[in-house]
Image (cartoon, rainbow, N blue to C red):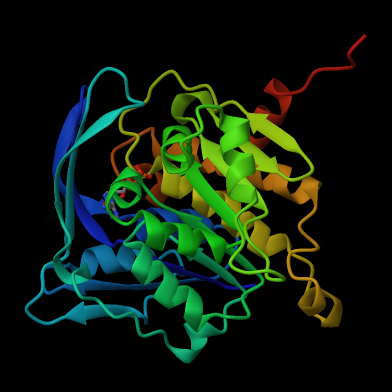
Length: 324
Ligand code: AMP
């Protein structure tokens, strides 16, 4: 089941206590696509400027990512983000954001991108997320990520975008900021109650990312949480959230039961708790590789065998036997 993703395709400048990079490949859609491509076919939608290099495009295409809907805007500049981390790698300062070609971007999806069954609206202006969502009205599973900036300056549009998806993936602090609820579970429940209009489905899966502490999943029926995979060396968390989302959504896309009359009549009905939990495990594993080096450096070299081996390790360290 193929996946379409829209979001930033970027150059990032990043400084952490362990080093810095002045201009590396980044962007939410890029980190997502590199992770999701381990599980399923991914089509990236978004603009880049004249300054975007062939080498960077090749990083995606060499992973089998469909880049036909990456639009090169003549005379434009690629999205640029500069961030800095202190010793606490869970918090970072944004030093600069230049929207460049995203300013005024009108997403034009090809027929192929519109045919995907799974859609990920990576972090970008919520109006853009809604425009893309409207172009895939029949998608079977739609997930969305966002950030504090959009909660602050475009909350109404973001809420409308959230009401149009099945799954919301946010940092725990963003979930609190969005809902005004201090408690994670009640904040998630609040978002689960949002609906576009009577009779239409709103979000049914909420994921709160908690940085080095892991991630929690809340549905109307259940709760699940995993710690982050324990690493001794973390170099750069940039893109960890998007890589997590790529692992999660990619795993779901690869394992959703085939399309059919039943699936069409009850979208999302085959999203079992078991599938969601296994997707959380794969998301956790992918994110753990991302933080081992700067930007996309580690995930570019990652193999499926390494993913599978770490998934087995994660399974071992999160098991316990019985409660008596
Ligand atoms: P993450 O660390 O998963 O939150 O994502 C970091 C990535 O998000 C970086 O590669 C940035 O290029 C990208 N990014 C940062 N700020 C924004 C923004 N305002 N809109 C879209 N993408 C952004």
